[in-house]
Image (tube, rainbow, N blue to C red; front, side, top):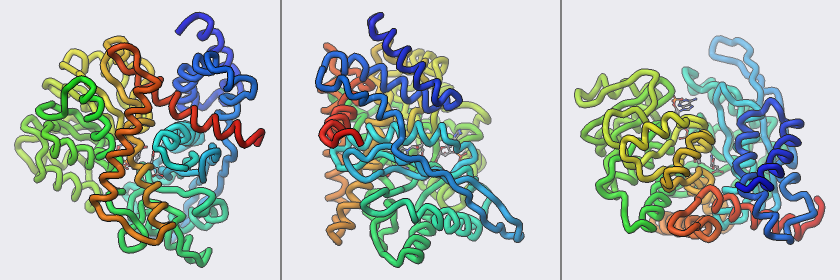
Length: 452
Ligand code: NDP
Ligand code: 2IT
């Protein structure tokens, strides 16, 4: 970045910090976007003079509310609920709900801000939003989760709707939670409608939505490989996480002939030297989705699996050609990135949102390792949510094959958009490409709609 832009960036960030000083994740997400967009605006006068970026970093609306509920012992519990309605220039607010004890406004604003650009990249008409709660579903009974979800939706329902704001899942929110929230929305509003995505197949959900984020991330990685006349086949892959995104990323890598040697959760990672095959993947799905257990239990079950407590998958004692971080934000730092370079790394695609720290991204960038930021590579999840919304409006259901093909084509077009704005000789800067491509569509819509 030239000196001229460095000064502009630091002036811009000073103003954002003055208003959001304690929101470190949000500032991190904004700075990454601003680095790409400030030079782009400078080169494109059409986008000057209307404070587009300044408007984009300000959510259109933030809703914060009390969520009281009774636990199984009859004790009163209180959590905090949020919905950040960030930008509706190109469609109704769309984005997931996260239930995790770490949830706060900074995390939801970073996720909502990222979602605006991601949704723009999907080619579908969706604005950006995010919400959730500091509620911890771990160790809670189904009954407690239902009570919480019903109370959360009792307030949220007055702010959302199929043409206004359409939430979905994220960390801690899967099919079970979406079911309880949909049931409560329907009861309170007396409307059976596509107000949430990630619904069950028998009540308005889309085939392939559960698979979509993981599959999409791997489709995107395969497009990255294609630009190098290479493919996932025969590559050794480190995946972090063992939830929704990780499970289906692993599944698609197996289908494409890659070898996945790790999975993880917040207590550590498992190393599987012979690779995770379908039996071990089925074990992970059952463990995480039904028993809601810990990844360490995989090492108890299999002799050829080793568990490393409190360590990250990037430490795996083997070559790693591809890194797919699929757990959470800032789970791959500069030191991890250096370690990965020493293990033969050739490609990184983010399944999670902002899992790589700015230092890690710099390491990948300097080493010219193709690096896809989550807003491009994990956009298949929300894209398929968009396809669920379309099916709900049309009152019909597409087949698995139809949805999968649409998802695949969307991932290809996101890759093309990144290439259009990010190609620099032999190298593609996916961070710049994704941010600029995402920005252009939202900015054009904002210019057309005037100062609102
Ligand atoms: P899940 O709740 O299904 O799984 C989350 C996984 O990440 C679990 O293995 C969890 O371990 C681990 N994890 C969560 N928090 C931490 C932490 N603080 N430190 C270490 N590990 C952690 O969530 P998803 O798979 O849906 O989401 C994973 C990521 O993908 C998130 O960044 C999410 O925003 C992103 N994403 C999700 C999409 C979706 O469609 N679901 C779409 C696009 C992005 P543990 O069980 O120990 O908590
Ligand atoms: O981060 C994300 O894109 C999601 N959690 C999915 C959002 C959605 O609306 O499907």
